[in-house]
Length: 348
Image (cartoon, rainbow, N blue to C red):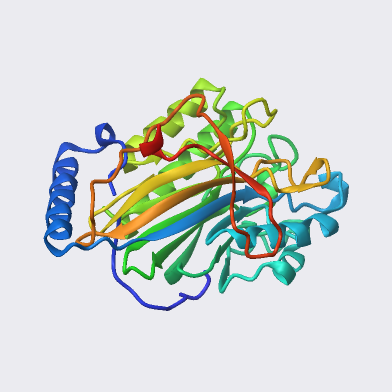
């Protein structure tokens, strides 16, 4: 476990798919939102922070496995992630030091170490979470998964002690929510899928214990293939159990990427998350080649503490083929690269 990172503190966030929550929780959250709106109208308050969230599997394997030059890729990745307030990385194994040379986030937390000390080629979770203003961590925990599938075949997942990072986040507005960064078991066999189901069950138990009805952003390489009905059934059940909505973040239309990576979210009792856009940042390239074997997916939210809300949140939409347009995201690195956005929901 990594030590708790302290800054300032408080609690929670919005309502995802209303059909996914138990009736009592849905009613309670609607009452909270209604009271928040009344408070906002009465006081004229309109507080909130806009945050950009990135999830990215960095493919940080040794060069002889990755089939490219990670020592060239990782400094570039470190520069590009500076455009985002909250960054959730997977497969950040061997080249983390190169990434840190150019990543300028105030807080960087690493996932759990290897649970197999007797295995010289085994690694830890490969998870890294980075945060910069207005995002500040108020506590963080690492939870390794209890199961894996495959040492040589099936994705060789047992060589890494996969798990998830859970952090409590406080924004400048006072809003508090939780964030999860995770990487589930790979592979397409029945054993692989059974392990993913067990990993999701553990993740659900911990979230229900630690975060309860709190606002939540959960993202990472879930290895749940959108084209596989069995995987989508697992995802749907997980979303329904935790009341999570899908931001719809995915690679640009016409790309060859499999849909394995997701950004899910919900609001909670103390904070509201309004989805403003989601998609792929195509700037994560080295010339014509991508910087990883996964797309760099992002979502942009406006996060408001309950009691400082000026208008009702827009309920998320999950388009099958979301429309895209290109805008320029002001980079903090001095590099300007186009970022592909789905239109803000109230612009559709």
